Length: 265
Image (cartoon, rainbow, N blue to C red; front, side, top):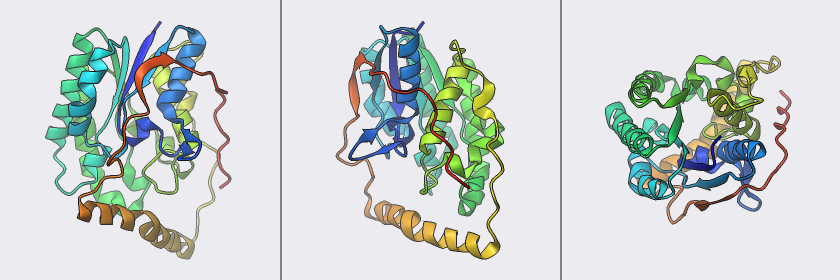
């Protein structure tokens, strides 16, 4: 069983979408740590993730601290912030991920990672990015195979694009989405009590009419896409000036492990 778990990554691993600035963010990595601690109370957990980080920044800022913590389990999730940028280079992103896979597995850690879902089904305006997702996912699978890294292959499962698993910004998982991701990692790691139910479809969701759908896209553009574009133009990141939330290995506080209910359609 794992006793030293370290999570590396960006906003998804930090837990954005599962909590808020006032109460703190939980997220799938915290939820996974809680499951591990329920199996062995000796578990210690660190989360080095910081929102807005590109894959190269995760490698530069988090890999060395992670290695110092000598994890026996590490999760590496990065690349989405690269994928949505104009200068995206799948080979460069995959090389950063593979560097982390190689270093962590060589240190004795079991490493787990993910592929990315079809983001064009989550945000219709992102449909032109589908070839990027396919390219990066193929490279992640290949790099993971070379280093015996466990892969949670989210792209294969339609539920991963269900809007109820995503926050209104369509960039971060909702509480239910974070719970599903944690369950997916638990299943991939073959933890006791885990199964494939994380990939089960939710009850059917009512399909909005054309006018309602169009209005939703306009609201999303004004509320979330426009501020993101302004930050890009200004050369700023949502993670500027922020530190990771759990820089040191520490015991895990137990919380309810039941997933939240899906929001109403």
